Length: 467
Image: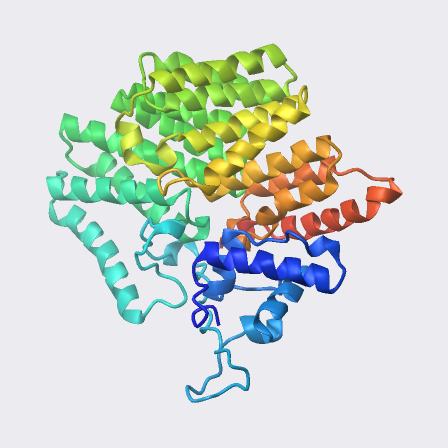
């Protein structure tokens, strides 16, 4: 239906949706519908057919008013017969695109690092068998190249591994973990075997140790995303040893940043602050964006500790460091290895919100972070950090007593599919849950509804998808 009406562009659809909501509000004397909108992510799920549950009742009412058919028909699969006609002048929506297959690690396929901005083909449930065979052949070719070049590491093997690690670093912030974990485990294992058993020249060894450190760091982040801080720290320590063997100052600092992040979400803010300090000591003359990340991590940790002076000093240090930052070789990998401006805005907002000294400032900073992710480039966007900014905005609004505003802010997070509900996101949602007021008749209903939604959201985390 959107195709025939030329509403397949999000901005066009959003304008039509908001207009229909306003008209319906007037027609049915229901002011709650005035200004009702739809997020880009939700539109993409509706348009692509990746819908697991019916939209919320108010959204259903607006959609049915827009298209003149029931939501079940609108979002359901197209009729099997191509010659089916409908009585309405509207055409049937396109067949739904299946959601990605969530394979166990040993069966995970290769996925290009395109994310939601890419036009590249992804291997999901709709991928043809021919495309699967091509991807599997590519994986086999990498293993064969490493074997065929003998006991020494040749330039082709090293080049292929570099390309694979770079693909994964770019993909990590954009794709759900179940689609990447198998590839991460496999490439780490290959690098370890080459370092353990291959004849490696000194320069090659340094590069392989750097790649091993990056891969181990991503697996540390994966363990954290699955809610296992013990395994995350084990992988992070391996990554630090690899950084030491590569004698790479920026990589040492990056791993300390990762350890600070793991400690922060594990509920150990003092340890998180200590790791941030260790990272700043390891950074030395590092001028890449890792130095900005360290300052922001310090700000978040000190905010949880209630140290306002240290929090503000760290935020200022992050701004000063950003002004002097120059992209280094880690930034060159992109994705998880770099720290873009939207992520900095998110961390600053989170620190300010959790410090709790100025709710209005926290709200404005969280709004700035959310806006930055809405306009982020492909290289800057990350679904987890965007969700974090949304939950921080919800927390800031709750601090100001705005229940409805908090519900609006957290809505895009609660719309995330199960495969993206990692530990950090579910923990952020639980913070909103804990901040919801109780006992007031006036707000009790809205708060209770939101509390119920968050309970359902956090009931099935990403970890259940990994076998």
